[in-house]
Each structure stands twice: as structure tokens, then as C-alpha cells.
Length: 120
Image 1 (cartoon, helix red, strand yellow):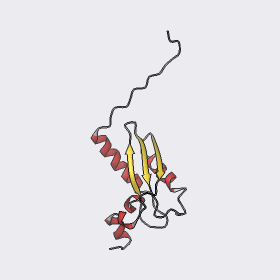
Image 2 (spheres, one colour):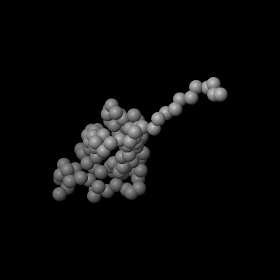
Image 3 (cartoon, rainbow, N blue to C red):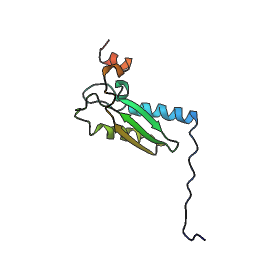
């Protein structure tokens, strides 16, 4: 007989496509609020976001890079991204990983970013 209390956690139901689509829209909206201080374009349009994974428990894992490894805000920008994503009430947690492979280059920028920076 087990006299210790055990708590069973049920796995979360998989997110429906509609839930995932809504969260994706919200994530993109929040990512677009974070700017590289040296370039007047948000990190999403700059192509600094490489990957966004959302678990069924609504934990978010983001792989992002910087325009240059020696970027002066390298230590701060992942925190800015986490804070922005955590503003979405449904998100349980967010972790941002800085990656430098592949290295960022201007070809990753959206047409909108290139327009803003007069690169056409």
C-alpha cells in the first residue's frame, strides 16, 4: 500500500491548428516589438529569428541570432525577446537561445526591412 501522496499529471492535449495559428500570430506580433538598437528595424523583419517551437504546454523555445557576434546588446536582447513573448497570457514559459550558425547576413531580411533601410 502506498501511503505517500502521488500526483499524476496528465499530458496536455495537442494544440489544434487554430490554436497554433493564433499563437503564431501573437508571437510574430510580439517579436516585432523588439528592435536591434543599431538598426531601426524589428528583429523579426531583420531575419534574426531562426526558429520558434511551441510545445503543447505552451512553452516557447526560440533560436535567434544577432547581426554581429560582437553586438553590444548580445547579453540583453534574448531577455527582451523573452519578456515580449511572456506578455502573451497563454504562454507558460519562454527560453531564447542565441545561435551563430548559420551566420546572419542581409539576405535574411524581409522585403519590408530592406525597404525601411533603402536597400533596394
